[in-house]
Image (cartoon, rainbow over all chains, first blue to last red; front, side, top):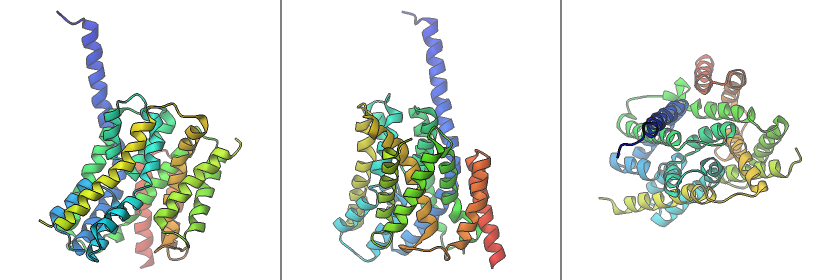
Length: 244
Length: 107
């Protein structure tokens, strides 16, 4: 039986828009590339100096795929600490993703379980902030877009750590180029665009200052990873209980 | 093959995937109550503020304003461009170039 012409047409449009969404995701990943390259490169250099081989470093980037966890794991491996204690440290450092993953859930309600599973496995700080600042404006995000964003960031990270291991000793002091500020600058840009979205400015500012104060207040008592977690929860909580 | 290292890598894989996947896979199935939905809307701003503050104001687990002065100065033009133009790439490049220029001047 011949398919109705209308069906074929709509299928074509749908396919085209899937590609378009995917490549839009790739494009929206570009601002994160600088930050990833410089941190990934550093991570490769540090991993090598802690005694990891090329393939072990690539293995970490591929399977763990988490910047600060990899730094900490590499230094613990150097000190020959037990595997369970290193795995537990990785778990604690990465626990903040629990909240990032939760915050993205409302934008992906139309997806299947496995689609969201695959989005989650490649979720990082950077792809989270790009996705959430887009989500705040659009209220729904496409699976193809998110996959384009996630995959670009993932490949860039593996590439950057690989380059760090191989060529780390050739490049003397790359901090001179200011690349180590790329990530912070990107976070600043995304924070500003998020506050321009549909939350009242007064409330946004209140959340921002609460989070910063909680972080600073907690610094003498807990590690900065735990501090970030407490500040994130505290800031959002104050936003929730605050009137208008 | 180094069994110790690959135990860490595969164990690390498991413990990083669980917190990434569970909330998005499960919470997207249910309708959230309004308070929780609001909390989740405010989380990104809160997380971003905490991450930026940690990058700018904390060195080796203690609060440091002066050790990071050069990065704090680089924040000003970055913030200005972010507010004036809604272009993330432009914001990132402004930050990188300002910091490189400040370092060049100061040394």
